[in-house]
Length: 156
Image (tube, rainbow, N blue to C red; front, side, top):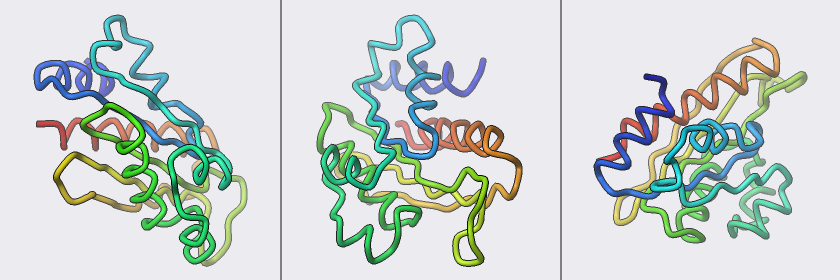
């Protein structure tokens, strides 16, 4: 069973709805979940917030937070997850923001992806994974799979 199927199974058993807020993956987590028949029982919605404006307009990420930390940062990943949770009927929300490549800088290298995981009445979890220069497709696939594993680990 793949990560998406395992996540859906666990969410279904616990009765928890899922929301996603994705930037560099462009909806790949929501697509992986909704590819599976019956996913509508636990997938509430997915936000593809690729631009900074979309992060602000769709899920309420403060533009000043983005200006202060950059879109690829743990504070923005936290705000994205919390915004997805607040703007949905979900009990858990995962967010992804990163630099899939090509490109990057010494300060924010290619392959850096920040994740947030928000749940009702719990502190928001966040982490950064340095996937490295694997190529755009591989970074995006790695980020998708990591987000699904985060959901799997944090679902009750």
